[in-house]
Length: 286
Image 1 (cartoon, rainbow, N blue to C red):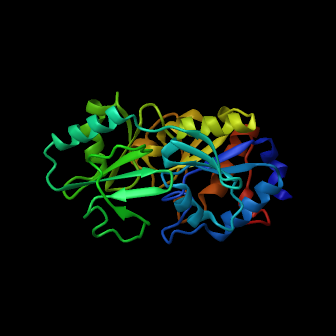
Image 2: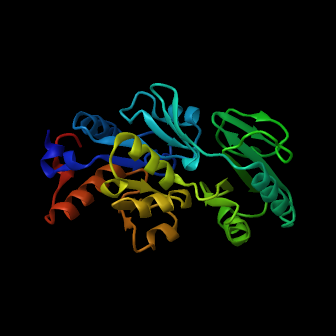
Image 3: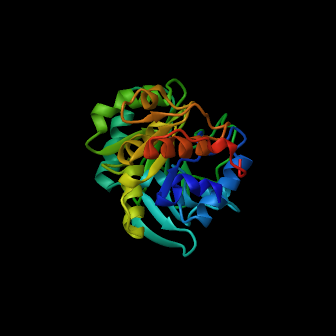
């Protein structure tokens, strides 16, 4: 097949973010990328999703497409084999850290704000958290601030601050207790300390027996930052945050999430690997 004439069969895996990256603004994978996924699978290249979503949320987006069954979910806190419903790796927020994060948020005088938490496929929100959100996530309303069970991550939303502003407020205060990242314009995620999509990708790579330094990753938001830095070639889509595109260790794509970024990333990788210009867009799978 034409795609493998440029050496992509030497690529063990590609890690891709979902929202704002491989999913277009309609929440779908474009037809060219869908065909390319099949080509890559047939050639032995794993395309592994690395997402802030829960496993169920990811399945909803990728069902019927040729993504790898190993999923890096919840910003790296949970790595699961979807085909076997088997957990490969899991990390949770210690109760003391969870309590300290909540206390720090409460002391910050943010105005009206809401908390939510995720653990595996459970999504518990405070009343008001999903107000004026233009998409639906299966959830239940419950007590978050005094939660005592295991949590994969805590999520903060306010009526007056963007996720970037919240990240700036809490990064120095909470970096020893949590890994902070944005996964959209409104929500700030608090994951277990030192846990990110990069650590989840490393666990997935260990499972298969390869190194992520030989891999590609594609993302758009701060929760992708460590992953894009850790792989051999990290690509930020054109709609990525400026912090991503300004990072000297990350390559910037011309394609946004609506214009086939997977295809461009492979083309750019093959060009850099072989040291010669390639034109994958002319190949018959495009």
